Image (cartoon, rainbow, N blue to C red):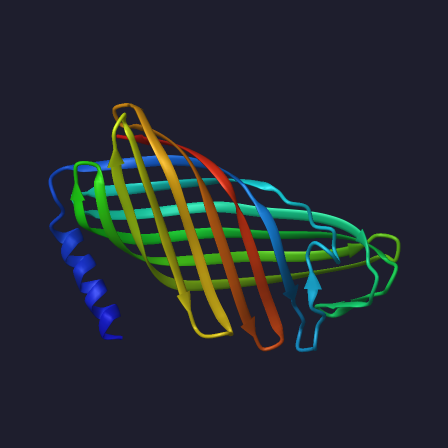
Length: 248
């Protein structure tokens, strides 16, 4: 609690007397991701542990990630949003209990999983000079999700929703290289033991062909594991990304 109070007090002081010079960074990313994971959602029952790929035939997909950052000296306020969506269709090989419904073996089941991933954070760069930085990140991540299964031939359909806000901490670093290049990365996350943990990490090589324009290519790894009562969300996403950023 003392750490939270100290962080809020520091943020208030920063907002009350910001530096005179400010930059706004707007960036768009395209992430070529692979998915692996399990879900279990029920309304007070036991529920079935569902493998998204093996049981539901969920396909890998690619996603657009938008971010905006307000830079005020060594302080940064940042927000990111990434809408995630996967679809699958498969003939299930075992009974699946999902929500209030049971989907019987050999049913043709269409599935959809949507997650809106919001990130609101504050970054303070301990080192910030000549294209190099080392910073700490305090961030709230919010997941707003919906999962649905549908067996059209029965017909049977069930939809479950879930919301999860998670406070995280992390580090960000960048090192300048010759020829307008730099390398950088960041990792944020939290652990509450085996019942809940989150890691969102990325590394990239950056090229600045024009002042205030940056092109990047890198790799990102995301892991979310959350258990609550009989419900489970266990997702792993990973893959390369490309990014374009403009500073104003």
